[in-house]
Image 1 (cartoon, rainbow, N blue to C red):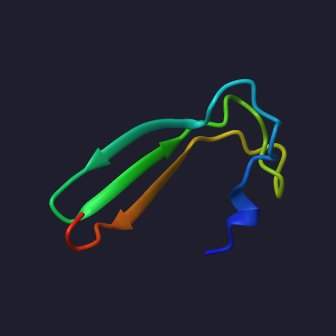
Image 2: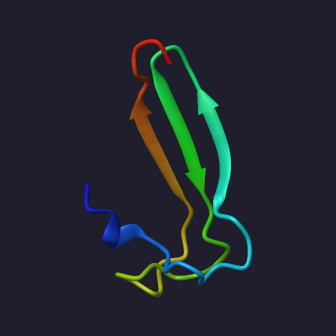
Length: 59
């Protein structure tokens, strides 16, 4: 995954961007809200991002 295409510039946010965390039996979900700021790769894209991870064993 290329994080540079969906990252917010460091120091470019007034508040933290991690908004929600959900853990299920086999997944971890993290919701990032960039507070209306555009992405580095696409300044017009101000949507929030939902990241989904496979939950590691023994988590």
